[in-house]
Length: 164
Image (cartoon, rainbow, N blue to C red):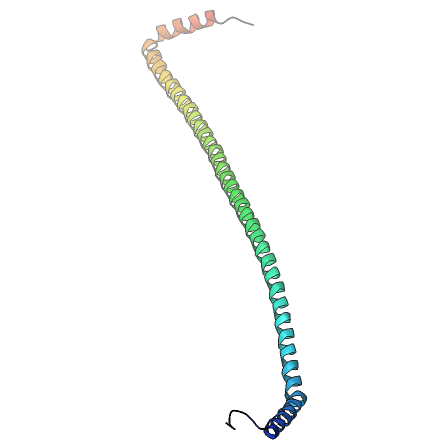
């Protein structure tokens, strides 16, 4: 039974040795362990704070990104609208320029046709005048083939002429 019930001396020395171990642990181990735990707790708190701040910044950045994306979409829509307007304007200017050029070409063609028409009329008049002279010459040659007829014709012309 001695093993179940410890002796008073054994109990005393166990308590003394346990007290010494506690004093040694308190002096050399607990302070560093407690300091390490406090440092660890402080580090965890700082990191949690940093994480909260990072989360806030991330939320602000996401909001900023959404705003930037919305602005970019608006800007893209404006650029596309301006490009469409510019395209339509260029097309309309090209059409107007083509109309003006077509009008100018038609006008020049009309002038050329008019000029050729006048030249043709002038040429026809010249040919008619030439033919008329040739016909008149032939008629006169035939009518005035003898001297008597020539004298009669000259007298009729003189009588038709009135003196001014």
